[in-house]
Length: 342
Image (cartoon, rainbow, N blue to C red; front, side):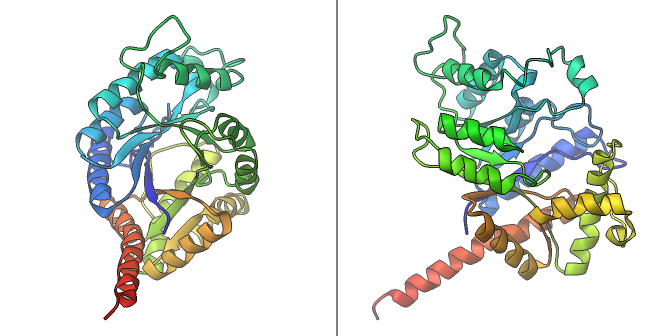
């Protein structure tokens, strides 16, 4: 099994608040560390009632401070919302606090709607076009010998791995050109996934950070002890996704029986697309679906997201996913024992 990681948006459920979301985030991160997940990433979004991870660097510090080994990072920081110097200082500070454990994923989208993006006082006409230059500037701030006169303190010399995030071929081209690892947002926008993977791997140029391509793909998992219960739990995320794509973002709703069957044609079409990058079911069903996705894409790593209404159900889903890694390790140990001389 390839490395598996966790993507968390700190979802705010109906009847809850961000304080509870942050407690749940830390609890999941602590379990993820014990269960052997590779990294724990938090995503920047703004103005969305159901997502609490807006102050992403602050939340990364909260999670890193409550864990001891797992890598913690941004999946990602939406760079058009910030100056490269500020991000270099923030992640230089995080690296100084938690050496060797911080990742910095960078995205080109604002992570919000246009009105919210304007409220952040950014020049929307040029910021996304400036993304490649901003990435290079940010990396220079964190280099040992920056070319710029201004210094990021902390930040200069910080050994923070930089990733490019994307949901189109643009990010794939940039990651390949800069020789950086690439994370594709297939968990909510899978349409150009295979094309982006091909472009990234075909155009990759080795860099000081990375010798060969590394593709991480977002993947939704809703695992439970039975297929029926897993499909019931997944309906919270399905409702939320349809509401968001229909311009009605809100807090994560409770699950409902038969949501998929009752949804209208437009909702069905939305779900058909995104469910191509999802596994729903019992442990054997999830294993088969995850392995099929890895075989189809050749992914080097999966970033698992599991937005469920009940915290305990969400924990159980990640526990089941962790069993995929534990099961393979047990199989490898068994094979090694069989191969040993008597």
